[in-house]
Image (tube, rainbow, N blue to C red; front, side):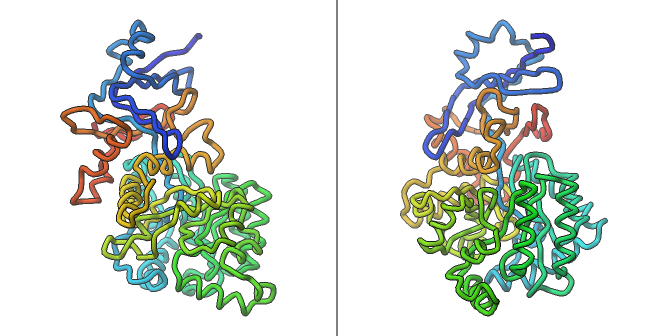
Length: 439
């Protein structure tokens, strides 16, 4: 075909397919087809088969050999707050106190557009550096801060400014009219890249959630918020809403969101740890997605908020979709490798079977693309998909014998210092071009 060229990348390859299956080639070949300005994956296959099929097209100029390193898809982080980067390692005695003492003061700084622009450049460069190429992001209440995030981010992201019109610090409180006007403006400007984002049911009034949900649904935008992260939070929410007309008979936190129109197939609810069977049924029926944030929910001694263990088996039995997120800054580190590690370790400690590294990789990559409805173009390394991948060094005397073994060796390598995961990818490709190259 005219204008068609090939590139060849040699390495070990991990290609997640679902919770239990991940293609693994100890010596693999990723074939990329460049056609005009477009690039897509032509094939992923073992090296020997690749040589038989493509050797006549391979040259030193179009072939990159990463040696024993591993190629895998870029990550999807489905719940994080870019404006909380400075508080991710602050003391976390409880969720509500942590918000008041550290998070809210940090977010107040983003009222300054110059500060927001400077922080956005730093943060989103780091986000690419850790290999995250998609996900759902929370900004502060400020319109300019959201615009800064939109201009700096690289990848398939939805981003929303948090909405706070009640029970919030004066500096972070909007009127309902201001919040709705800003929502309309951002939908007009960013379309489906914008996510309608009530912070949670405590700080966002039901009237605002109801009106904004309708706007988001009309524009086919995603909606995101927090749900049942912490028992004290749930108690506060139910006590508050039982005093409000139309909500006095709400049986649960989830029921409140249902009545405000916040649930649905484009709704992402962070955490969802403490849910009843009736709530899980509600989430399934509305096709709402839960985002599990293991590093944020982890015990305080592990730099988390101590909110509890997400029962993924119970969630799956209820047929509720879920994916993984870092929850920066409730989570202490930005890398999804750290999130995967925490997911596996916490469940292993609790003697819960099935929490494998293969499952964690799927829930950090393809699962997010499926939630967004873009799995046909990204999320793993299947043929005809966009060229979005990361390269991770693997120092091993002999090749891993399986995908699980490869991931275990990668993730258990920097045991002492979790922050080293941030530097783990040596190369990051997005849409066929290297946007990070530390090789």
